[in-house]
Every structure is written in structure tokens, then in C-alpha cells.
Length: 139
Image (cartoon, rainbow, N blue to C red; front, side, top):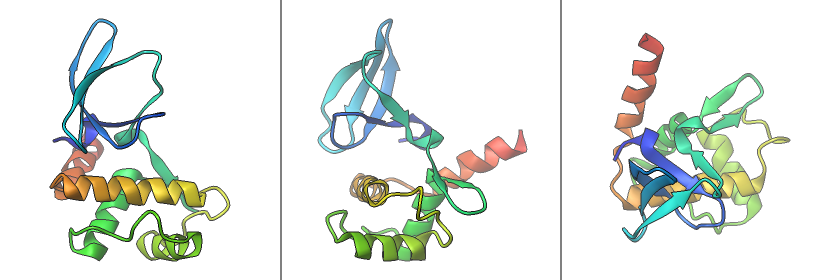
């Protein structure tokens, strides 16, 4: 499973891996339950590789945030996304010090934590994210 092929689809819970492209969209597989189905152009899709989190200095790629959580949690599941807003914000400030508290909402933190835990359950290798980002900077 490659980080640059993982997407979130608006209105559908969980994360999905892009398997193949079709004329009208893409075929994806749910990371949670393994079900396959088509995603068409009418769906709003976000590639996790393109998402970044605001800090006061710059935007940090989501992959780096996942790596920070994986380092803190030693590759195991993190805090539950169902914790209180205050706990989630305190946890996120440990993982990403200096995140922009005015532009990064509790709902965003919940999504990031939930997505991280989904990837951990799917045995995702967070070290592979670093290789993808380093390869881009070398080009």
C-alpha cells in the first residue's frame, strides 16, 4: 500500500486505496473492510498525500504528521478520535508543536487521528512515507 494512492472520500467513512483507473473514475478498495467499488467524478476525493496541516511557520504534509504520531506511539494506535476536544488538542500539540490553533479545528484533528489509527490497523508502514517525500525533494 502506497501513501500516494490513499484517498478520503467525502460522505464515506474510512480511507480507500486506489486500485485502478477507469474511463469514468477510479476503482478503490476500503482499507477498513476490503470492499471494492467505483468512485466517479461526482465524488469529492482528497489524496492524503496532498493534505497539509497549518503551523505558524509553514504547512506540514500529512505524511510527516503521521510519522510524528507513529514515532510518539511507537507504531501502535494513538489516542481515540472520540476523546474530548481538549485532550485531542493537547495530544496534537505534542505531535505537531506550533500547529495553528485558529486554522486547525478539533474536527480536523479528529480526522487525522482517526485516519492514523485506520492505517495502523491495516499494518501500514509509516517509514515508506519518508521515502516518498525524500524522492520528491531530490528531483
